[in-house]
Structures are given as structure tokens and as C-alpha cells.
Length: 314
Image (tube, rainbow, N blue to C red):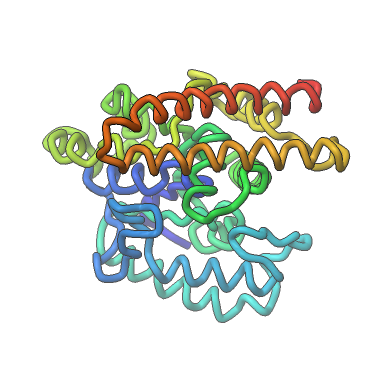
């Protein structure tokens, strides 16, 4: 059993989990020694703020059941009781005891935890779940840019992770926090999370300057014009939002439509890559071309959404 207050920042890759974890860290939540954290890079220039040991344990769990972070396994019923996990439970318990000894309140994140949460709930049964929400298309575009993956595979992965989040946190203490709101009014969005955590050890006061300096436009790459995320989030409407976005997308479309989705997704990826090239160029003569491509991306995104909704009959 765990007698400390533990915050689990839970969310899909590229959804703002690193940003939210670091902000909570600035506000007073311990995330462990710096030398044990995953460094910057791999699309997160401001750091990942996740413990290497948690990442390793999660990767091992996924591997045992024949999957990976980008290829989630189909877990069997009651999989968290599998004897093959015994050595990982020992490692995880050692890690939790070490974190408990460091501070009164601590936080951890690794997007893989969305998939492996039943394992961690056996060790830390009363966590507080802070769940960043980001538009599905922005996530898919960000993954495509980082991993050179397709847009449709990113959408599929987004759905898989969210189905796990909703299932594994049902009935738990959780709050949904919207990633884009931190760039509009971070104090308001963060205060909601602080109030939810309800700890004297976590506070904005005295940390405003550091938080403001940390939150920068470079943390908000691949933002889009249209977003369907509800302004107020709860268990009911977040579930509807997830289902409306990409529910059963690969079950409801035939091969021809799938090919069209691949083509449209690749077009968005190619245009986005071209924009990055234009932005990096110092030649003013390319500005007109840059604006033309930028507008093409906006149009392609809107067209893609309409296309998906039409064939899913949303």
C-alpha cells in the first residue's frame, strides 16, 4: 500500500504530458533526481520529465504481451496477475519506496502508462490522475513529424490510448486538462488542476515567473485551426468526444476509402514538411510560396475532417 499522495500525469504521446508534468514539478511535485530522468530531444527540446525506470518497466510489460508503445498489445483478461510480471512488480515497488522517501507528494508520467495502468494501480492504488487532452489531428501530425509515421496510424493510436485511459481511470480521482488552454490562459487552466490536487505542497504562488518562462510557443507545435474539444470536460462528454473523433475508423471503412484516407493523410504530412522547409529559409522570395502552402494545409485539414465524418456518419 502507498500512503503518499501520488500524481499520475496520464495521456497520449504528444498531448502535453511533459509540459504538464514539468509545470507541476515547478509548483512543488517531486519527479525524482534529474540524472534519472529522460533527457531532452526526440521531439521534446524542453525535456520529457519522465523517469527512465518507469519507461523501462512499461516497455518490458508491453513486450511481454507482444506489443510496444506504437503497437499496443491485446491484453488478456486479468493480465496484471500474470506471473511473468513478478520481477517487474519487485522493481516497481523499489522505485515507489524510493520516491515515497524523497517527498510528501510526487508525480510521474510516461504515456505508455495509459496502456499499463492496471499494473501500476496494484502498487499505487489511490493515485490522482491529471489527464491532458489534445486534438486528435494535432497529435497525429506531431507523431508524423517526429516519427515519419502516417496520419491515419497516429489517429488509430490516439484512439487506442484513449480507450485505455477511459477504461482504466473509470471511477478514479481524475481531472481532464486541455493542452491548448495553457497557451491562452495558463493560470486559469493550471489553477483547476491545483485545486483538484488539493495539497499545501503544490502552489502557483511564487512560481509564476518560472512557469511563464517554461510555457513557450515551441511547446505548441502542429496546432490547427479547428478543434472539437469541449470547453468543459467530464467523464461523459470526453467519452463522446473520443468516440466522435475516430470511433471504429478502421472497422467502418472499406479498402477504397482507407486508401483515400492514406492519400489525404500523406498530403497533409508532405505539406507540413514543406512548410518547415519554408520557415527555415531566409530567402524572402519564398514567402508567397510559404503562405500558399500554409493555406493549403488548413484546407487539407478541414477537408480531412469532413471526409472522416462523412464516412463514419458522425
